[in-house]
Structure formats: C-alpha cells, structure tokens
Amino acid sequence: MDELSGGDRLVVTRARRLQRFLAQPFLVTEAFTGTPGRTVPLADTLAGCRAILDGETDDWAESSLYMVGTLEEARDKEAAARKPVEAA
Image 1 (cartoon, rainbow, N blue to C red):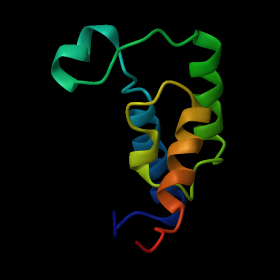
Image 2 (cartoon, rainbow, N blue to C red):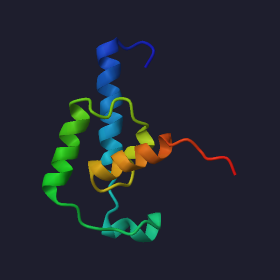
Image 3 (tube, rainbow, N blue to C red):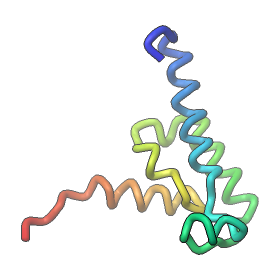
Image 4 (cartoon, one colour):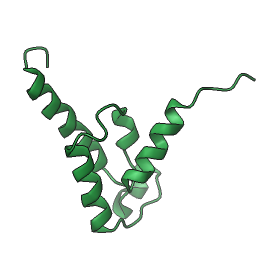
C-alpha cells in the first residue's frame, strides 16, 4: 500500500469495503458463521455498493460493513462502534 499513489490507495480501500459489504449474512453460511442468514433485496445491495464506491463510507471502519444486509445496518453498526463507552 505504501508504494501506491493516493488515488490507487483510495481504490484499494473502497474495494476492501465493498468486499466486506458483499459478505452478507447468507442463508447457506449460517451454519459456519453463526449469524442468522436472510435475503436482502437486490436494490438494497446495489444501493449499498454505489454508496461505497461513491465514497460515503470512506471514514468508516471496514468491520462495520462486514456481515450486514444493508447500508443502513452498516451505518448503525458504525454509529454503535463510535458511541463512547459509558462509565460503570
């Protein structure tokens, strides 16, 4: 990554986010992941892909995009991760 130009680094970063987003909770992987599988409408998947490629998630953690169905779920996961931990 260090040898790539700034533009190339951005492309790689977005590709990694897209790859994680496409690792949705599929029904066939439920036994392996322990995450309940489900069906995500194609329109929601494509909207999430477009948002990632357009840079809307550039400042999110890659983990926020992993094993979610929609971009809204990823947004909620990112917000929860950024929420300050309350003192006990």
